[in-house]
Length: 480
Image (cartoon, rainbow, N blue to C red):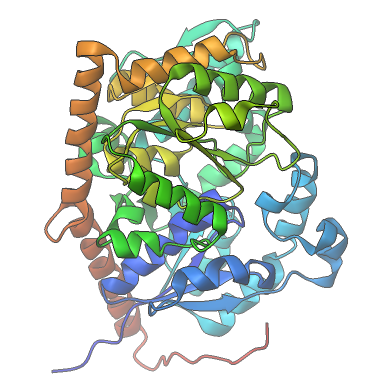
């Protein structure tokens, strides 16, 4: 019996934590299903990726930015998390400068498949020319995808003059209303949307970091488009966490004094579900006035809290940390989110509704306080609060307005307590957590989708090879 060579898959993430982390998790997932997985990124991102793949069979291939892009990367920073938003446009100019060397890499190494962020739309033509199946990774689930496709197709949001005027999203199973101000800024770039859409249509299919039971009607609706194929393989973070030890080891520096202090404090909390975890993702950095209101709101809520603050220049008002001593911990910078959310002491999550955080909150089985900031986060909020029924939206007022401490305290109290309605949310959150765990176990929906996808790719490779009997695959060793 002939030995089947492992499927060689290159994973090419956008250089931003919200995109890289799930892509690395997905590479490890494919590897556990027998594929030979390689992450392709730039040298400046090696310190972020290398620790995450240590101990796994996932390889790392470094592709430098060309010299022409150096001036577009201030201080040599090669990841969006290290840049102010004012420099993001420059970063994307540098990002597109990678195209020639990435296409050369694909020609030289000829992997059996590539999984790329949707932003690498130009890889669709290169992959097609080489006969390499391309899988697209959008970074979020089928619910936001269906909502965004409705907006792109119908342009309903364009018919509203006021930013605060609401409209009904058409053509989806649930009644969902959005304000014009809640529509993602990507819709300002219609040409880019068309480019990404055309590239997806040329590709083998879409891999989705979600699980079927979370959004079944939307998974069906998304797959219903003629010619589209999609596989739900998530939550990929949960698929790569087997027990508390492995969760603790996922990325970052858990030996940082602030992190150790936080974990020790959580271990000392005697009441299960009495602490709220507060984090707004890796890119959002609030102004001091807003941070002051959050601090006061958390204090007034009366609940214990772990709060991750990205603004290094902010200091709480005098006396705050003393007043909350023993029931609140502030972490500056990075925090082991999955570990904290999974701790028995944590009973709620104040989140910006990024898709990774949304899934991690669902997988942890905790109700959420939703506070979206940008992109598809406002759509994810609708899924959390309206469709799943596991969240409470913080009262935000008009777009850009400072959220006051009273609104923060009210939303936290409602999510953490909330009487009969609060208990119903907690029960639903626990049910979805059980569904998420079942999806990634052997025989679960995400497990089977992953296994089925890899099998299809192996069959594609076999058919391609049989159509070219004299073809032999070679690897040209290049220095990148």
